[in-house]
Image (cartoon, rainbow, N blue to C red; front, side, top):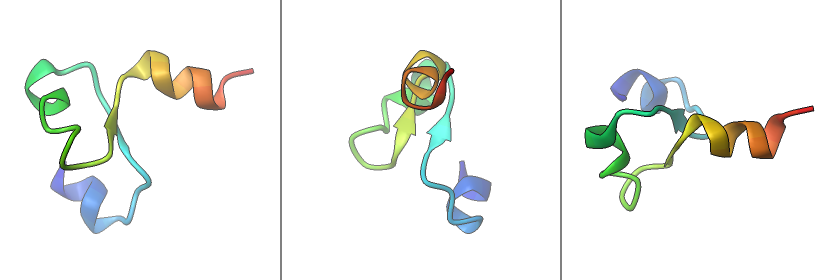
Length: 40
């Protein structure tokens, strides 16, 4: 997660439930949400 913050990423894409629990603090989304935003 800290790598994505250091890289100035827009968000972290993960299915990890522990990381997703931090989504209210950090920009973290599920893979399905990523594909909804950026899919074909």
